[in-house]
Image (tube, rainbow, N blue to C red):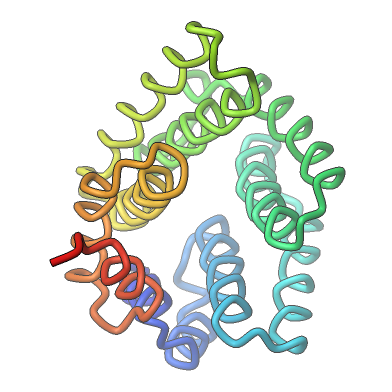
Length: 220
């Protein structure tokens, strides 16, 4: 599975798609769906082609119709809604994003990973998404509310903890989102550089990560 994920983040989309198709029967169905969504998300982001965007939407719909155990369905929906939220923000559909935010919040309240037979990696993935939601949800509240700032700081510490995980998926996602948060929201480029320095070392062919790192360098 890690080889497919690495190919996606090295922007080797054809290789990743080929491996995903060939190894599909050997991969846990949950991670097959997650890798598929991630592959077509990044492919359409990089290409800006309508055909790739359509493939991303088709994949989301397929995953949304997948029937599994109630527990698997919940966390699969959580990931799917999170990608939909990224897409709605990308096209500035604020109303759609607000509706998805409500669905994500409801799912997070329903899922209790301590009572479910999730693998450790899946539990970490859930808690990472939970921390990300806590941070971004409290960004929408007035900055002068100290309780909201405390919640965001706690969420940042949790996300940073997941950047050091051995799980490739969790640590990559944590570094990516934490780096963007430090660059775009917290205005702390030094910490953002740490994240994208790690990502470019891990995925040297990723032009997006390299651009983030280059643009964040202090003026000489």
